[in-house]
Length: 140
Figure (cartoon, rainbow, N blue to C red):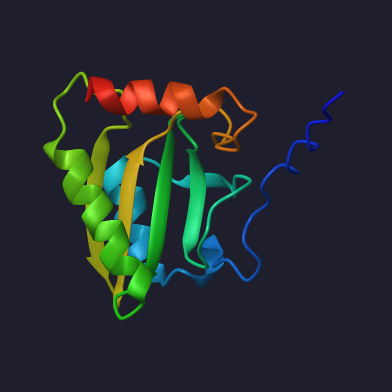
């Protein structure tokens, strides 16, 4: 009889992650103006790998977006901008969130995408998520 290892624990937000309040006020104001509503609630989803702001922004008008933000000199900003470039280059029907915008203010950069409901994929060998992710990438 072969025992499978237990599934990994669910991902948790990275320790030391930036919060909405850490984002400079001029960038927060720019995002609210561009998104068409005041941020009423901020949720940091489980998982992720960085210390940057990575959060669901729930607006006072009911709309939701996912935003990543970090100081311009932060190495994660380069990755965020690369992600934005890739999302912006995908065909409209690609199984990926839509790029909503890239915003720069007060020495910080934010990348905003459409919010998708769902958990972080579990890419461990015993999970079926890896196959689903591979198939979706193959469709792109």
